[in-house]
Image 1 (cartoon, rainbow, N blue to C red):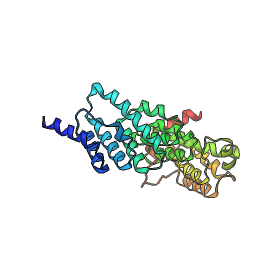
Image 2: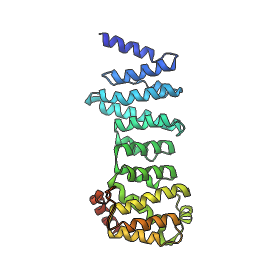
Image 3: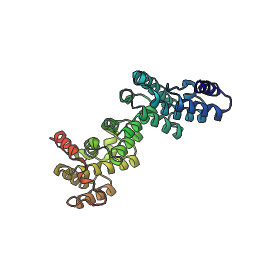
Image 4: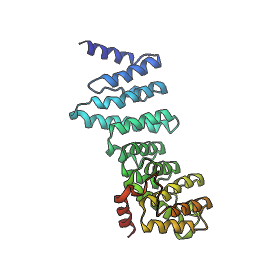
Length: 273
């Protein structure tokens, strides 16, 4: 009885005019209510402090939902979080992070896959970051995104986390960049699905080269050698390709990255056959 009374008071305080009180009441309500309560109006609140705390409460609320109601809860929560990402437009990094964290904790991958083709770059970025947290190989689809920042985030996730199953997809970006001795800048003009910023391209291609190094097959070494010989490629990247080749026979023991992806290496061989 006392718990029910306390939850009722929290629900009333969630509508308080003071943003701190409203925000924390909503957060605590989500964190402690056994029914997994959350308040849509606070999740979409115009006050960023209230919104942040409400999203944090929602991320915790999912742990309280009973299995029979879990699927319904996940779909409703994922939908409002995707709406948050869309309205935020990548402007508030704290709000985006909170929404991404909540989406990953909810784990409704079907909702994430459906939103991966959203017209809003902010939504696609959020989905990409959530898939990174979930370490899903499907993040590779964002390597073909029209937004260079999303391409970079996908490359970072695959290489840095890492996500071994997606390494072959990352490695193929090097082929797209150096195909037929075509200058990367010309390639970008013709293929808008590839990165469209010289700086971003450099960050992505470094990770693509490292993917070849980690896959470690003869074909991967051949592609790195071809890239290093490509006079149209940036000199700094060509030098880095040569450095990787010099380490090919004996990968550095500190990183120990070569043996990482035997299954991914097999996938590379199948895809390149």
